[in-house]
Length: 312
Image (cartoon, rainbow, N blue to C red; front, side):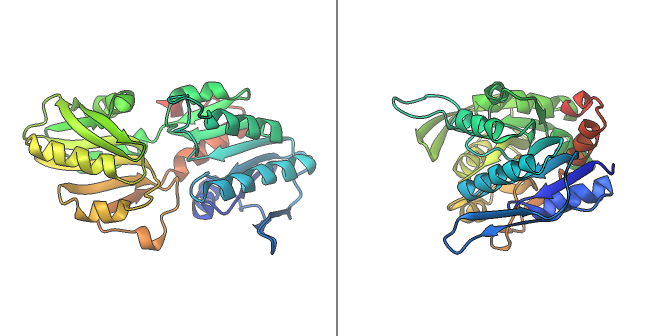
């Protein structure tokens, strides 16, 4: 492990520290801040020549700042003769811009993939991409992990009966099916119509949720509009209790206010792929750590072992 080095940007140093605890190594030293004119400043303080380097950095809000930090850190490490550089991106920002759904719009997810590869990243390690096909945007190896095991361990401890796993839209059906299979529960789908890029309305529920313990699963929660709509629709359809397990807690705009007002929602589970600041904490929001999952993946990649069992 003396050839392994883990660095962190400013997006989520807590997660990087917990990954290092799992690996039983020290977090490598680097300066990542800004010059007086707001340009990003990076200086790698530890020797990385010939080392297998992992940079832990989610591209969460402020997405542009964190993305620039990651790109500049990769460039600095490449110029410092690191043997291999793996970008560990628990939350891959810009993932929702993965296709041309309107005239004259970019495919920014592909642009970010190109930036990472051309800057010098040799490999990508990420978690619960918004769309699985984004893996094909990269011309370098990418390992795509899933947080379902982390959430399932917590939900199993609750010993819930009559469980139904709910997909809030068609795009999350595969994820919902994975949860339902692990928990031995039913599957339901909410048919919703998107009114605007930030707002969607629940229309129909496909599946039986009456007198069931419903668990809504999704890859990310931004403004919480879809979640609140889904919870209201499930309660109206006769669900006994409603929880949500959502990997990436972006929680932007009025999200916390909406969650506070949504009395139908019993508990919201999110991962620590994005750091949850103090002003966004709420009694009904519980954070589960993915440090062990990412740490195990880093260890296996470093040792040139298979990580395929972690994809299940």
